Length: 204
Image (cartoon, rainbow, N blue to C red; front, side, top):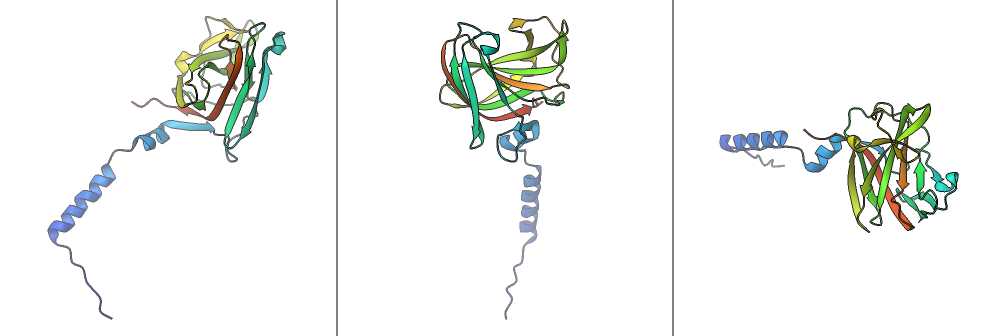
């Protein structure tokens, strides 16, 4: 059997070395950088953490809004109908969590919704007059379009039963609950598909 030998000239070998060095030193792509700067919290797949979501609508305070959720095909569908003749909100919330996200900048959600404004909620061990408070931040959606939305922790404000408080500030090292609200003070149907939830770190 005749073996065919391939020879490289010195200049060819040098060129290959330069190309290899360039590949090793090439900057990360945008998607690779994003992967380094985010922490996946849930994506509603079988191998994703189950936060044990449950419904809480304004009927707990005499309201008339309706809402619920279903999880399938790797997403959570949150839908219903808000009625401002009462509390005017529908929400879904997680079972108790124990998350330290102090190394991150905020929450990133991937959604496909109806163009209405929604609210992301966070709860910690913070109290006001002996009662557990919530931290809220609103975010807007584009109708029938998939959006990736960053919600900085600096956007969250403390509130108790819808009333804004002066403090305390959000302690992201002691997150014990997430919530998603439809509470834009508008009557009518709503629908949002939550595809993933991440914590993101702002690139320097």
